[in-house]
Length: 441
Image 1: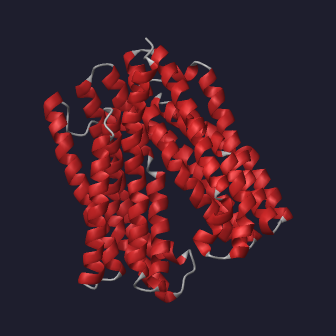
Image 2: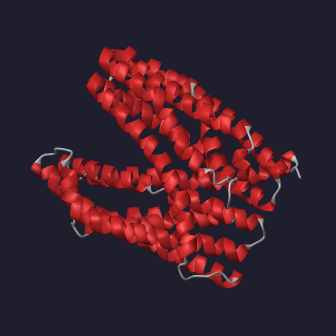
Image 3: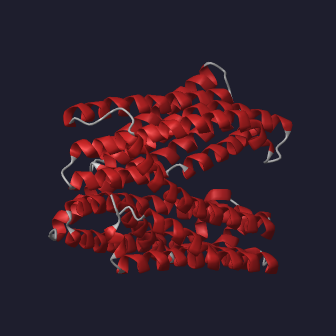
């Protein structure tokens, strides 16, 4: 049964707008955190950069806990099985706790080695190790938050995660200010404030989900079969995330080989593109939740309606974001660095990044659609396929070693045209068929 366009539009917006708010809350407060530590000096800030990179890499690889929990919950909501929906989400939280505990212990023990791999000075290494060894204890909390967020998204609720994110990150900023400056703990205070805020968010989620469990008669104790099911789906999504990280790391490696200006330029270009991605990822969250629910209801007509509408919105939003990037390409470099030479070097790359946002929008949406359909295995396989044209392109670029604006433009074309284009082709090909609609819950 199809849904009328105005009704479907409202449902998409009701999920996407709060999701956008929660997505942008974290980077805003990360910037605030960096500014606080930056006032301590260059060495603590450099230490934060290294420690933060390690933590964010681990957390980024574990984001599958949200992506695998959402469709599992949404399917059961669509099938009118609310006890099963909440139980599935709670199993995802137990898996998050187990993974987080193992990673936290391993991370604390490996912190000195992880920091040493970056080759910092002794002073910077000390700051980075301090930050990392404390921050690791917040890792289980962050993973539980991922799974709990996935549970509520599956229940078609993105407003509650927004408020928890805003309050949690605001508390993080306040605690960091108190510990860094009030108690004089330095970079250790930044890490401690973050850990306390993360566990505070878990406490809020625990209260909310405990009430849901009581209201719907859900099982709170961990269930082996349920955890195994979440882990199986999450494992495929983990591999899909690995392919994205490989592409990004290889791109940074080639940018480094091209030269310092090119590396700095790529950082600016990628930061701008990542900022635009928040709006597009919010649409993907909405698509994921709505597709999962519609499949649980057995309403394939509605699934196709959601697919068409979110794809259209993704293309339009991508075009709008891209036009803004291209229009501001001449001043973005000046805003970031104040260096006229680097600003000129960035212009062709930013125009390329802007023009290709019309492709990036549908790519984000299609990711969300296939996640909502629990087509995780295909996403993992497609992730590997997408690297096949991109890796040789990067190898050729590294061999030719073009410099200046054309070298950076070639790198941008590789990432935003070759790699993103490959993602679009593999995902679009999948949704043209029927197999993605027949994946088990």
